[in-house]
Image (cartoon, rainbow, N blue to C red; front, top):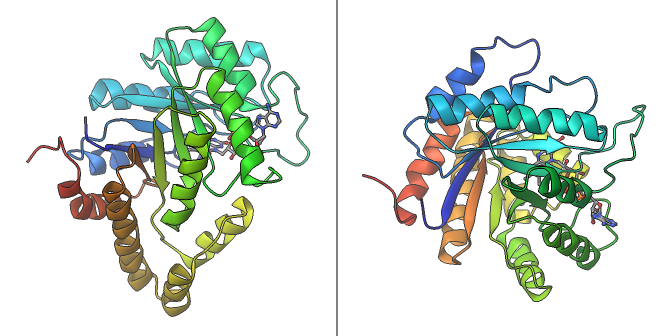
Length: 284
Ligand code: FAD
């Protein structure tokens, strides 16, 4: 176990991608020894609902790293959630990141799980031995009226049984520290990991910032303006930017750093090479 925690996130390959690509990702991450790897869950009714369980199983059984399976609930009824939870259990995975998921235009809502907190309570009741994680938003969730209101709702989710929070990505650590102070003042005491996503393209950063109603600080905007059309330079600058964010977070004694690997092991390795000496409990 690292101190602070160091964890990674991967996603199942797209439906038309060769099955083996996830092995390339996991092989590429070998030796980093994160405290866990979480696996995202396809949203909506058309996604392959078995992929998360299969990959989480591979991570824990073949690579010997604890796995956390994401699970979204907005478009599921209890029977579908039971099916997913049983699949996780059979795969030897007993840690779930319980999510509401995003609204999808044109898809019929089911109405059984309107908030992640509904899913958290349900998992606690049907799988009391599972560890339940939740998501949080340093700049406030895009549908919340304010950060304070979002934190009030977050408290409901934690009280429903979440024992570990992972944050949305952010590019200005001050936003994370402000959120942390408010969350602690609201009585949220569970560990809160800081979500860091390395910059890999100017367009994707801007698109994601717009979708999540999150801020691109001036310092990052300068990099995007300078190297927006020079992908190699921007990626090099992105690795430095993420590494600096992590150094500052560790210096502030955060509970953990959750790196969104985006299935890019080379970038993840370079960031970890920069940051590893700052984490205690590492080997080598
Ligand atoms: P909630 O906690 O339900 O919050 C959503 C909104 O509802 C917020 O505005 C909140 O303030 C409000 N709210 C919450 N509870 C209440 C309440 N009781 N009463 C009134 N309002 C309330 N999406 C995927 O599809 N697949 C993934 O694998 C995935 N992984 C993610 C991992 C992380 C770490 C994060 C941060 C996000 C992830 N997402 C994923 C995206 C997530 O599904 C969206 O951000 C979604 O919009 C919100 O999900 P949530 O679980 O945070 O929702």
